[in-house]
Image 1 (cartoon, rainbow, N blue to C red):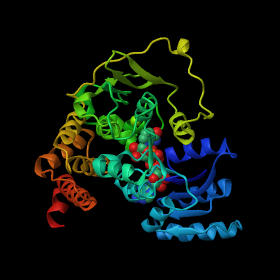
Image 2: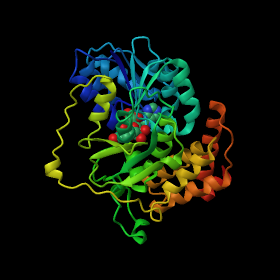
Image 3: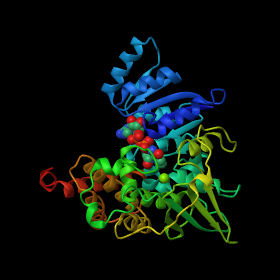
Length: 395
Ligand code: NAD
Ligand code: MG
C-alpha cells in the first residue's frame, strides 16, 4: 500500500513513519510533507525514500532541493498548498495520514477524501470545522475515514461490524470520551491565570505537538473531540459524555442498549491507533509496550470540572448551535492558543477570547466550504482584535 504522510515532521507524522518502517513488505512511502522544517523532511526522505516531498513554504522547498542534491538524492520537492492537495490525491497513494495541525490541514484532508482514499484522520480540526460537509463527501466518494485520535479510534474499535462513518449504529446509547485531565487537573482556579506555556505543554501522559498540548491543558481538546465524535458516529453532543481518567489507559467507551459498555485499553502511545488504522481490518505490530494492568493496579474516573475548564461548555454550545459555530470556535481557539504560546495572552484568556467570539459572531448555515472558510476568517480577525485591541482597531 502506498502512503502519503501529510505533516510527517510532527508528532503524529513521526509516529506514523515509525510504524510504517516496521512493515516494509506492507507499506511504501509515496509522499511526505511539512510546513517549513525542511531539514527534518530531508532526513525522513533519505530514510524512507518517498516519490515526492511537499513543503508548504516555497523558500524551505528550495533549501530542501539543494540539500537533497548534495546527498545525490533525486526526489522532487514541490512547494505550496496546491502541491499538498495533489500529494493527497496522488494515484500511487492508497492511504493518507492527515496529520497537519489545525485548519491548515483542511484542504488536503478534503482532497484525500474527494480522491476516495483511506484517510487516517488525526487532523480533528478539519472535521470540527466542516463536519456534515466532510462526512457527506466520505459517503459520496466511497472514502474510508478511520479516526487516529486515540479516543475516537477506541470507539471505532468498539463499533459493530456494520458501522459506517457518520451514521449512528443501532442500539448505541452513549459515547464516553475519556480525558487525562491535562497538566492542570488538580490546580486551584486562582493559579491557572499565571501558568506558562512551558507548564501547559508538559502533558502528564502524552507527548504531542504544542497546539494540541495546550488544548489538552484547557480541555478544549476534549471539547473539539465531543464535536469530532458526534460527526463520526452520528450522535448529538448530549450523548457524548466526558470522564476524566488520569491513568489514560481506557481510551474511551461505547454503551449499548442492553447495558454493555465496551472499552478499548492500551498504553498511552499513538502508535497503537496508527497501526490499527493502517492495517484495518487486520492487526499488525506497532512497537507499543504491552499494558500490564497489575502494574497500574487501579483506574480512576471522575467528572470534569466545568468551572475551571469552561472550554467544554463552549464547545458543547457550538455543537448545539451547529452551522458555522464549530468553525468559529475552532478558529478563535487556534488564534488564542498561538497568542498564549507567544506569551501575548494568559492561559485563562484563551477561553475568554473564544467566549467573546462566539457571542459576537452569529452562526450561519454551513452549506458550502466557502461558508466555513468565511466564518474561519471572520473569527480569526475578531479574536486577534480582542487579543490586541490597539492593532485590531487599525487593521
Ligand atoms: P505537530 O505540531 O507535532 O505537527 C504538525 C505537522 O503539521 C508538522 O509536520 C508541520 O510541519 C505540519 N504543519 C503545521 N502547520 C502547517 C501548515 N500551515 N501547512 C502545512 N503543514 C503544516 O502536531 P501533532 O501533535 O502531530 O498533531 C497533528 C494533528 O493530530 C492535530 O490535528 C492534532 O490535534 C492531532 N492529534 C495529535 C495527537 C498527538 O499525539 N500528537 C493525538 C491526537 C490527535
Ligand atoms: Mg485525543
